[in-house]
Amino acid sequence: MFDITMDNESESLPFLFSVFHASFGIVGVLFLVFSLWMIIHAIWKQEWIWLVILLIFPAISPILYFFMVYVQASGHGFELPGASNRRRIKELQTKIHNLDKAVFHAQLGDIYFEQGKFAKAETCYRAALERDSDDIDTQSHLGQSLLRQGKTQEALTMLKSVVSVDPRHEYGYTMMAYAEALGSIGQKAEARAAWEKVVAANTYARARVQLAELLIGEGKQADARPLLDETIADAAHTPKFQRQRESVWVRKAKRLRRKT
Image (cartoon, rainbow, N blue to C red; front, side, top):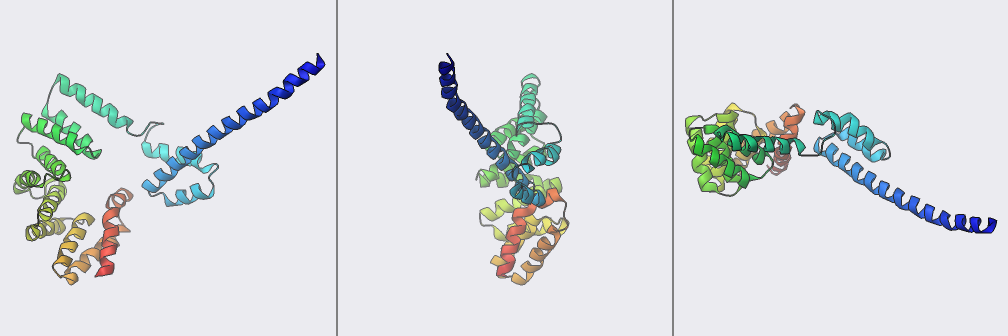
């Protein structure tokens, strides 16, 4: 009896070790995925100090980062990415089904636009305009969604109708889209005039850099340099959210400045 028990125990030990080893491996893979998620979030939010900590202390720092930065940045408890948008989309779809008002179609279009789903956004904006054709906010947003789908001529018509009524619509964002539409079809003189209107009233890196690029194309490097220098200098003093939004233009400004 004693010998049989010992044999059974000796046979079960390797099995238990193999189960433990497999479980440990799964946990390790999950923790690695979690750590990479935190690192990507730190890069996206430009949390450079935390990024260094995550790389130097990989064993505990991802958990600290999750509770001290990620959750705080989300403004609520744990939630899968995009969950709040999905709830809002469902809410708007219900309102559209029950009330079918232009404002709900437009708001749904704005969510899809922010997600980069420009075809869906276009459908929503068109539905909104069918119910309220005079809403210039919806006209502007439709024009911008068309522009991002390469439907430039229709976008240009839509955007021109808005800036002719209100050149500073949405703090110049509509005029910037209009300038980009003009530039994309080769109307560079008209595009430059539109960019100059934006730059005269705002300090957007997007406007300054694209105006500078047009000036460089015209051989006017001396006129372009101050725009690039201002963009680079301002980047160090802008709020974090704006710095993140304009980072692509600041990088482009630095590349262009090295060439001028």
